[in-house]
Length: 155
Image 1 (cartoon, one colour):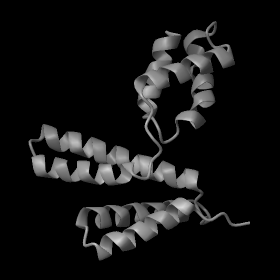
Image 2 (cartoon, helix red, strand yellow; image 1 turned 45 degrees about the vertical axis):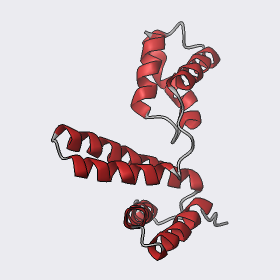
Image 3 (tube, rainbow, N blue to C red; image 1 turned 180 degrees about the horizontal axis):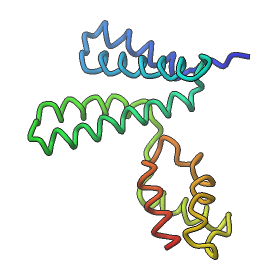
């Protein structure tokens, strides 16, 4: 059974619309993302069709690259390059689930600690808590921020 990705179809359709509208930023960003999706599909020992969750993972890693590049360009004083990276990140944000606020992340971590009974184990239980929470935050929060919150609450 082959599961086609609705998200990938939407990306392709939006790329066609962006090209017709002569929207340079949107079309180049969507081309880049579709290339990254294709690369992910053919990576590994055998090629496979990505699910929507897999496509969201690719999108969030591409968005993270844009944010990090924008920060680097800002620090180097290259404002137009930073603006270009931010514009691409905004296009990607249209396809990602609504990001979690810091409070929502903190609440999810608190409930994951309660569910796993990790309070007594302290920092040794970090992996257990992270695996319990990972599916809930996937594509919606930066992993480093989630890990920092888990450390804060367990420490």
